[in-house]
Length: 333
Ligand SMILES: Cc1ncc(COP(=O)(O)O)c(C=O)c1O
Image 1: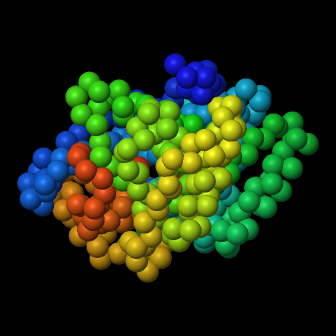
Image 2: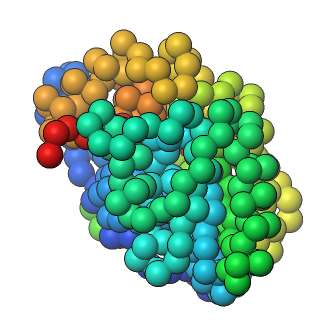
């Protein structure tokens, strides 16, 4: 085993998710599309706590650091429908930590019509504060953290999306998990496609592909919001952080692997459902019984469908990163 790999294996992590997540062939989708290649889905939407999703893997590392630091409270930030905040709240409840969320957007009224994800933040016992704009969240979190020591509490702050080098280690590990599943099945993917936004998932996968020795597997992150240039820069910076954590020189992992972000499927903007995304979500539900979310995974699947023959050769793995609660709001009890 390489030194970098053994450093990853040795890094403190709390086993909070339900892994390995299922890897399933989408035969009905292949048939419906007349696809000339195998299509597989890696179900991180079934990762467990907080209704699952890609944040579970990142938080296994970030929360291990919080517990090691003796934290009593974890603070993080997101939009009012944030999957990351909801999953942080669920895992904090499981660990007996208080969860403090700074959310941007108008505080939704409680009850009927409330976004389901926000209602779950409450159910999991998180405390919430609200700011108008995304750009105000980080400073509000720092102010909140500064208040806590005088109350005898020990805060631990997790940045947006847990997209830190530490959080990205969760997805480096995830690629090794996929490699073990593929080896057992006797094939190797030609391409992996997933939704990308704050870059931690993609950075972890870049690192994981390097550690797995899968240099020829194409990786495409499909942007939910920012330009390819912006997200590509964030991903590269995070990978450099992972290199540092694993004792590698800067650039070791990115030198051979260009970071590819597809930004042609954002539509009208972050969180605004696109027509191509809606069509992709209908297709997956009707042919595979798979539920996508309108913000991230439906747009990523729209990209898969539009570019089916262009990414890699051989089986394509669509990495389902979760988020389905965005389809729901509370109804009458
Ligand atoms: C469902 C879902 N998919 C994909 C992403 C993108 O992941 P990342 O922020 O690590 O790029 C997120 C979070 O932003 C998400 O909630």
